[in-house]
Amino acid sequence: MGEDQSLLTIRRILILSIVLTTITAVAEIIISFLYTNSLTVLADGIDGIGNLLISLIVLIGISLFTKYSNEKSFKIESLSAYTAAILSLILAFYLLYNIINKLYTKHVVRNTELAIIIVIISAIVSFGLSIYKFIYSKKLNLLSLKIDAFNSLKDSLGSIIAIPALIMVYNGIVILDLIVGIVISVFIILASIAILKESSTILLDIYQEPVIKKQIFDMIIRDYPYIKDINSIQIQKLGKRLFLQLEIKFEENITVKEMKKIFIDLENKLKRKFPSIYKINMLINYK
Image (cartoon, rainbow, N blue to C red):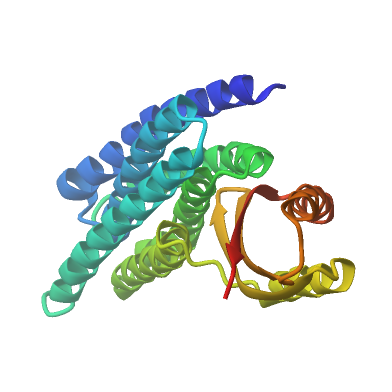
């Protein structure tokens, strides 16, 4: 399957995810408010809304990704992931705030059987969607789709945890309804923080890989006697690609022809040794 066809498939998966997640999340929220008063079901529904927003943002990011073929596409994709993580954090803290307030009042859960059924449906839907998203995020190495897949998996794990808790609530242990709501909120917060760290690294052009830098330095100094020193090695990671910038100090007696030959040979050698390198920019330091 070509990349264009894969991206088309991803868009279809995301649209399906948005539709199914909307149905299950809205159903959970309505059932929680009108029929069960279960904070576990409400937490699962709000988690689903967060996952829905993330899928929507990722869909927009993927659409822009297909429009641009250069470095800008990876920035857009990472920005989509960053925005999705911020929205998830806001929803998680809102949910946590409401659950903590409930700790100070008497909490009653009604129609627990209905709560269990809707949570089981949510778990099945979320887990199935996460599998598809993981497959295609790995195939194209798209950060935002991987994040969306983790959110679907987290959503399904939250629902799976909620099922035995609601069974125990049905048997009279009502406090578990609040505890599971808090656990789901913490899941959302931890996942969102991890997403923010990874996407921020790309957006701020921070990519620290000392092992790769040392390998590059050692190879250049060893194989090219006309190169006196490497003043700096900067690596920028954009999606699955690496953009490399070298500041090279040559011997004073080197000719322009020899310098050009070294540039061509060095670029080919680096790309063979590190296939993820997409572009190399070489600067000359005369000092």
